[in-house]
Length: 230
Image 1 (cartoon, one colour):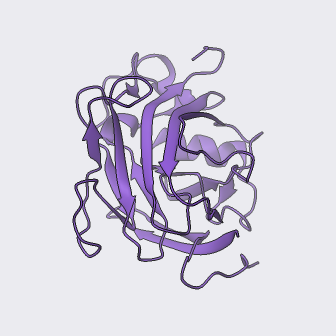
Image 2 (tube, helix red, strand yellow; image 1 turned 30 degrees about the vertical axis):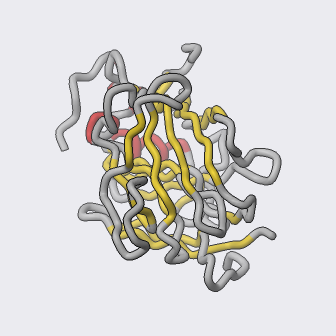
């Protein structure tokens, strides 16, 4: 059974608030310093493969790390595994069971001036362990220059499972990016995306896909400029 939920995450620099997923009370949706940059605001090598550690990634929302702490103990950093990724290492976190969706949050090296990413893609691999009790929420959130943009693209045919699944998210107005609310917000324009990417201060990737307590894994995150194969 699908569920809708409410997501509200407060950040020091930006607040992200839109209809996503409230597992306890489902409702229908209603109406740092940047690294060295290459050409067009893109670094020459910008990726996280998690082969050695969590690479500075953190967690946002209702999550805890993978070390078995109680449901009331929440952590800012995901757990790292040295093997079992796609391939090599990966990171993961466990749903805290409090009824709010959780996300992997990108470190500073992905933020700042990412204007060169427009027209390209955000690529990543996901798998998760859960019951298959899926719900709707944003899959990716971008925030910068006072704008919060989100996109929801997964449905029953697209949800990850126990095997690694690759996602490629188009960073252009041709994709279904929305302002604030991933279901009801107005369609993001090219200028909206360019503005957010020019001074990106939040990048979130969905880690939770199950209305029950689940574990989400992430690997191989990277920006791929337009015209470049993965």
